[in-house]
Length: 365
Image 1 (spheres, helix red, strand yellow):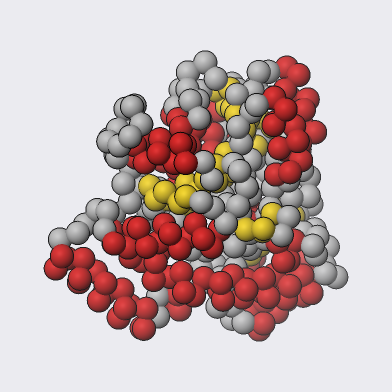
Image 2 (tube, one colour):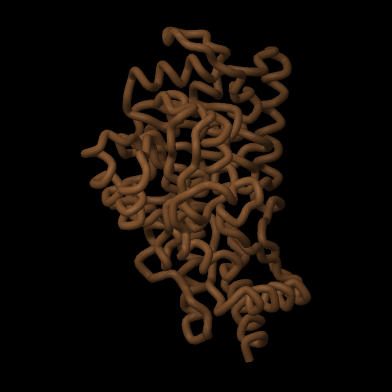
């Protein structure tokens, strides 16, 4: 039985296609291609859903990170703490504003930024901001990181690219006093038909700065900007998908629980049960004993028509363009390449999960 990693067919079902075609036709008829009614509607609804005062749509998730850094005044001469293992865009955004990434090691269980590592690194480096990542959709330890950063006046920018649907201490990601950035890339839980992103914040002044930066410096903040407007068609897609997202995210939690039950007797390392309700389950990672075992399992599952992805094969410091930067990442390096993400989308059946588990058991035996 083939099991797809993603399922765009059921996500974009006939009814959805008819509704979005109607919206796009209206946008074409009205000629409102860039910042139209759906931009404002989505921003209002998404801010309310995530517990934020402001939601500012931007062109993509990487722009969201860069604009968030710029709004905090981060640039040349500054150092920004980033997790030792994450998607390349986190460190890339730091470099793109002219700052220097400093690696903070990660928790060996969740792969989220480790507060104890941050404390150690701060003794060696003057950190001007940190960018913890809610990796795989797992909630990063924001309160513990705030306890380290707030006394030193260090701003936190939460990278929630994989975390729409994640809860931190019982509240939705976006409800803290930090900047929280989202990506709405087509594979995300809440997704556009192309690139789109957002910044959530509680601060009126910072929200004004973001609005100015994203639109060529136009607005009330006296500063240069860039072109990072979210086009109206992407906003229309996101707004339409809002009505289904809670149900889809609940399905992901149910599927994660099925995986936990089906895999619990196998010789693979699973995430603790307490993450079932708090994670967005953008991805469902399992940890193998070593890289060779991960590669072998991935090849076996592929031969059976089961889609998987090894997020992430390298720690940040092992990327060629990032090898010279400092900090600590020994745990990140030990995790890199050993994690394999199994199929995870809202439309998987219990039979799909059992099939994946059966083939993992076949490989391990």
